[in-house]
Amino acid sequence: MRVVLAALNAKYIHKNLALRWLYVSRPASFDVQIVEGVIRDDPMNTANRISAYRPDVVGLSVYIFNAEETKALIACLLNLMPEVRIILGGPEVTYHPEPWLKLGVEAVVCGEGETVFWEYLQGKPSPSIQTNHQVSSEVARVDLSLLETMESPYFLELDEADMDKRYLYMETARGCPYDCAYCLSSLEKGMRRFSDAYLDKTFDRLADSGVKQVKFLDRTFNVDPVRALQIARRLTELPSSISFHVELVGDTLGPEIIDFFTSQAKSRFRVEIGVQSFNRKTLLEVGRFSRLDVLKKVILQFSEAGVHQHTDLIAGLPYEDYYSFKQSFNTLFSLNPFEIQVGILKLLHGTRLRRNHETYGYTFTDQAPYPITSSSWMSEEDMKSVESVANAVEKLYNSQKLRHTLSHWVEENKLDAFDLFLKVGNALRTLKHPYSQRDFFRCIADAVKEDVLLPLNRLKGDYYRLSPIYPQPFWEEGELDDQGKEVRKAIRNRLDSNKISVKHMKIVERADGKVGSDVWVYPALGKSHTVLRFDEKYNLESETVYESTHRDA
Image 1 (tube, rainbow, N blue to C red):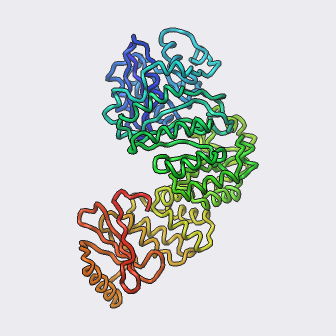
Image 2: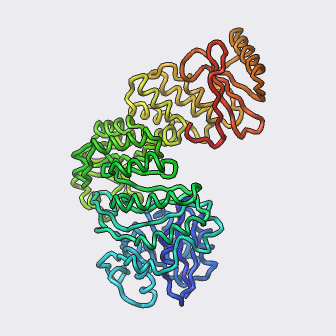
Image 3: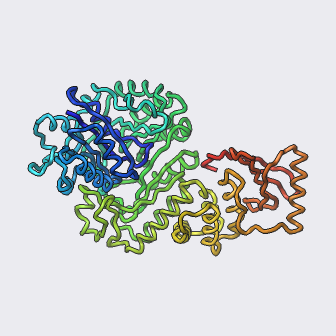
């Protein structure tokens, strides 16, 4: 039997680990291929790639981010191969398989499919399979010790050519000990762990794999603090070219593991900490029992240590109104994490919030990813404001383009951070695509001019810092007056005396607001650029070089 295992990933750099576990668990009698596309692909092109293998069966992996695109792919597959058997699996179909069966697919695997999928194709019945003639009665869970006996899904021959170009997704455990009402992981009771011996063998192979970034899928990497620290220390023994992403519960971290992430390994790990809200009533209602004072302290420690820390907030949770969410955002912003993700609550099938949506007054889009549009506490207008804030945070803060400038503005001008992002976010909505970097900065300047003292000083610094090649002049710069010409002449003389060769140069006010000049110097090829900072007497105070790929300036 010929089987194609297929999925649409968000981007090329992502890989679907579920397909690879199915691949290594295949019976010897099956001829199996993996086909991956991305959600932006033409579905017919992906369908043609699949049909080229003339499969008897196509197994598709479905998530909220690829659900609608997978529906289009199913239609294309049935158009090309009307007799093909299509079987679905994944979190998006596990808890509401019925609508998918109406699309012409044969069956849905509910839960983990490493054994159930292949047994079904061999004619063995399973309570975790749903068809038009059989209702699933349980969600499948696989014995991890069985998976350990199989070929590793992490180092397959079919992946060797681009191991250094794509993320490697790994797992040390399955399951989640928490019961968050908005999360599918809350339905997966109990924890199952891969053995230390299995992980050690995997990490040994990882050292020579060529992989650059490993993302652990564990819902809570530090659920067992001793084991988490043991694994993390083991990972730091691997080549320094490999970095790691782990998800942590911040308020349960002990001093030893905090010290590890903030000192010994901060350059190797990207950590993700789910905050969701700082409203205690909200957190209790959704089943999160966070020690908020401890959580704030940990986030601040990570920020001050320079850890690459990603934090999450969810807008629309029960008992959190617009004002409360604003306070949650401002609290998190004051802790200065590296990234802040502002998300809109999604009502996922199977979760408690989805089941009880009427109790909370939720209105939502009944199409993946199922974002809410209002609640008993937040209106549609409130949610649109949050979306504007989320957009501004992504473009200005998480991109690292203006992260430090924004923090400076909020502190220096005693501003409300949420309101500042809202103003900028609303302004960005008016920009017509495509827009230039110059348009982007002009839009920001116009949005904040009534709230920020001398915004152009810092914005000019960011504008020139983010330009790898000699850019268009900042929009308010005209012809040099006599004083400007004297400054330029004095700086030219100083550069010559310091034997600094300049191809292209732009002189602006110092971004820190002090008297003097910042001189941006650009080489011909644009591989890097430099800012020279002079005081009011044209003495060179500092020299900073930015590579064209520089991110956190």
